[in-house]
Length: 373
Image 1 (cartoon, one colour):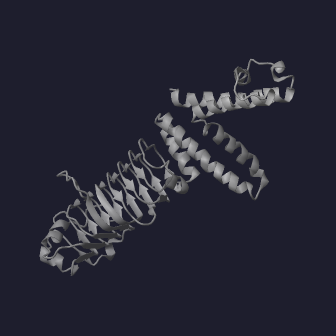
Image 2 (image 1 turned 135 degrees about the vertical axis):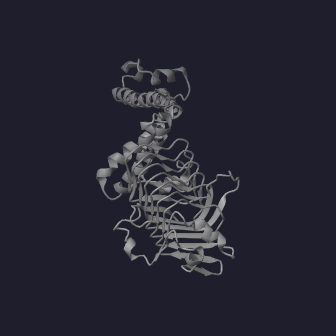
Image 3 (image 1 turned 30 degrees about the horizontal axis):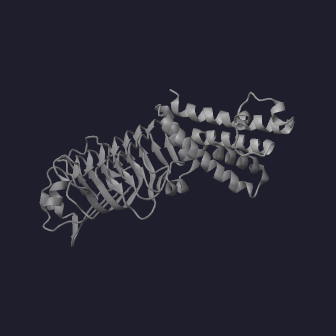
């Protein structure tokens, strides 16, 4: 490699002048192996530049042992890197990739998942496309990393036993998480989504947190799974549900956005009621949100609202006539009745109209939310 030529990784910030093992195109493969540390089934590459004439795969495949643990520290790769051989552990730290970096490239369309025990990426820059396809990962770390082009995690499963954290990440182009599975709570902390992102059919088994994410363009949440289930609701924040709702609205998915609007209000209700125990100023919010939930499940269940209308009719009928069921019920679910129908009980008359007005509003709103254009 001509060191006078410009490459994205050769910046002053990256500190190329500090590298002790600059591997040029004239370097013999055996000399490269001198800079590779091998111990049992572990191999380590440290402070090496691989140029366009020296293939990382050649070094890996030339080893006589079955490599299961790969550690790459402070290396620069000028060309594409494809890892299609299964391994137990891969660590990338303070590296820079000028070409593509693919784990399980799927060029041969393998049907079985690529099983990885540990994948750790830290302080690394990917200047071309990154792919992590159809992998099952038990331990995952990703922090302080930049993806300049597309980052694709299609169909991968993060089967960790602790929170899955994307920390201090820049996704400058597409971030693709289609058909992914996140077994634990997923947190994007100090992450910038500079381009479009795609979570189509992703499964969040224990919730999602987007509070600390900077989202500059649209996110596709079509068909996401389990974010509305009990375990996810417990760990997903109100702000996250608001973000999901808003992103669904932007692409015209009104029906699904209504569902996450209801979940946003549920988180708000829980917060208000918790605060009302210490500060009475939140008592009104707690009361209103509880009524909203009970009457129509936050304007999403028209059957519930209709049921309450008949309950009100039955209740007023019993109060005024001491009969549970009679044709008088229909008088007390109608706006057309007058004060005389309430035995001149003005308070009962006003209460009936106010309650029915609220319930009919919830009934119409719930229907409209599922049928409007």
